[in-house]
Length: 79
Image 1 (cartoon, helix red, strand yellow):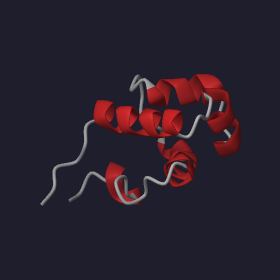
Image 2 (spheres, one colour):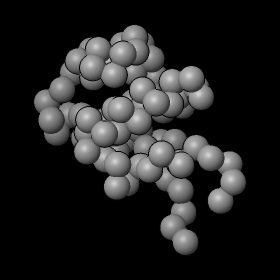
Image 3 (cartoon, helix red, strand yellow):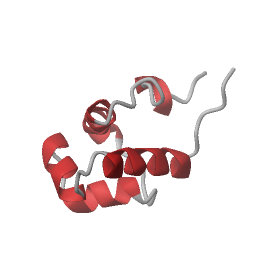
Image 4 (cartoon, helix red, strand yellow):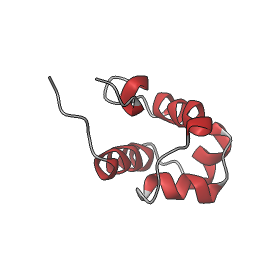
């Protein structure tokens, strides 16, 4: 079984994918519908999305074509 990535590893992966696509933090925040400050918090690993914002975070994952690496069950406590 593969070990889950850490919060920092997730943030680095997402932020690098964003940069590779030449997308600004403001742009991805607007597309997924969160404030830029929230997006910056996710990308710097300061915080993880709250349960209410997880669908928007998953929209970001889809936008950046990372669904194979960061599946929707990532935050589930049970294995």
